[in-house]
Length: 303
Ligand code: 13P
Ligand code: SF4
Image (cartoon, rainbow, N blue to C red; front, side, top):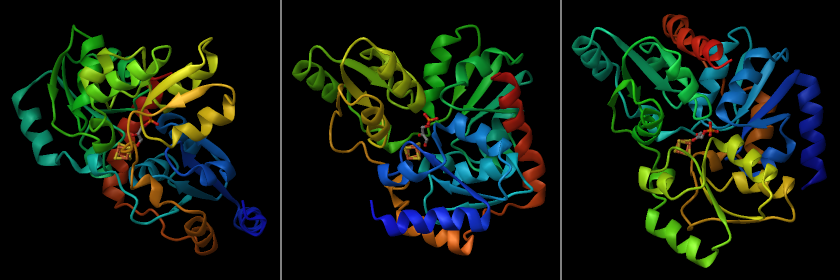
């Protein structure tokens, strides 16, 4: 990596009293110089506790919004203004109001991959690493799980006593991982374990050896006695997998395990965001007041 950029970033971090948070799906070069790298749950917890004046977020917009909601006194800056998760927009407040009108005993569970506007009309948030635990601790019998259909179905399978209403949102990166391609990869590498993110389809989950969030996939491979793995999630995780396990082998199932939004975050963009402390994440106060409630509930219930 270019030493000038590294030095410039270190200098700017001190000058601006800033901390850099990065998700495992951003480019390895960015992960390498972040102060904290992790899955959505870990990054939300770090954002809630940091004492730095400025939080620079290398990820997509819902992550920056969560950081702002959990730590409203801080300035949250996105490394790229346009990095957004399409799935976060695949549910509307109107649809939530419709389902609320149909059921008395209902909890609206919002995957963190949702907008602040959606969180503001939800009861509790979840991430892929705590969804089963959090939903199991909710009293309501009926669960409207938004926006991700695949994660909702995965959670529902673990909690047969609840009644789920699903939404048809999806992550195009995980949805495009086809069970037939996973089978082919298994034939090519019969010794490999298949490690999968729950945003993948049920057909893929059913032929997997382990299902978990990005951090859980990395921890599982790192702790395993096996040394070959087929990875069914976005390719950014390969950076940490290989850093932690230089002697193990990791295979993808195709060329499309690529989130174009996460990959918008570049070192150059990061330097510019640190220099200018822009674009800042700003949310209407009335949305902030409501949207933080389900996020805080998630932090309590996931303990
Ligand atoms: P996790 O890091 O929580 O597994 O999230 C996956 C994801 O799609 C984030 O955009
Ligand atoms: Fe959204 Fe999927 Fe990209 Fe995650 S990987 S940010 S869920 S599009």
